[in-house]
Length: 412
Image 1 (tube, rainbow, N blue to C red):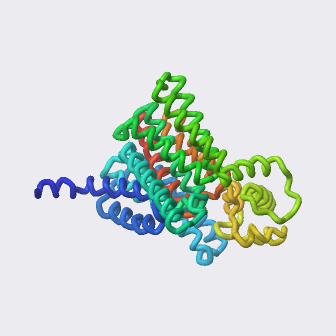
Image 2 (tube, helix red, strand yellow):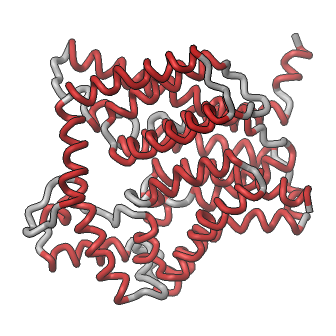
Image 3 (cartoon, rainbow, N blue to C red):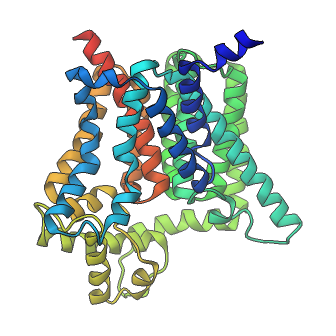
């Protein structure tokens, strides 16, 4: 018994369990994640290896912290740190994760297969909880909106939650194509989870989630078909995927309306300031964002200040609805241009566009998948302005960047 306790209470096992638990709870309630981040960081500081800082090559991995350091230095230069500290605090995981995971990696190898497996399990259980909660809400509490948009996504905004789920779906497909080391989800389990999570993405009614999901399904089914990995059972699975989902789109008024809204608003012009649909709102926000970017395109306005300037511009343009909702730029690239100008945009572009190219060259395809999904969501959401987005990005981007960096260093 003592030997068993010793075995599972070793430093390496404690560290491994702590990072797997973090991956698992990531899709759950935001307050739980905040508290667990403190536990995870403390564990890494207590059991990790600080000798990693003696190796100069490891300092290159910490280049990721520039995504937090630059906004901090910018506010410092503007003498606005105290006033907009809460905005920096929201993004603090961009600073913390690279440091604590580097210390973690000094004494324990990052088991990527296990981490993504636990993340998928977390996504599946959290989505299942949302569905069960919606059933109770609908049948017991007579909530007619229980299965609609924000109501069904209990833990996160539907746009962010579907991003998590789509990443899980893509990982499951990728494992069917090229097995991931230490990833222990069978083919049958994978297909079942894919169907369930795709169903959830559909009823969550996030348009970016739909576009991302359709892209993932089309890409991986095509690749599996080309590689002749599609048999009769897989064709039955595709039918199971298409028929019920087509029926839901046809019969569910909310989902049908959101499809129609995308088509109508993308082809029609906006002639008044009374706007309500999210597609139309985004178009006007982006137009307003460009007005601000032109005025300070090199260094931007600063974290938090940019959003304040955006609200003031909404007031000038008479967009009262957008002022009331306190909208950000709803596009991460535009948000960075407003906040940090061309310099910030180039930094973010390096960690997105350049890295996606490099991961393809180095065949680190899990990182490629992650960045592809992130970039798609960057186009319609300011991902790094909210906890749901920034923690997801900071955690997986750090792990996958370290994995890419270590592979690159070994080959060099």
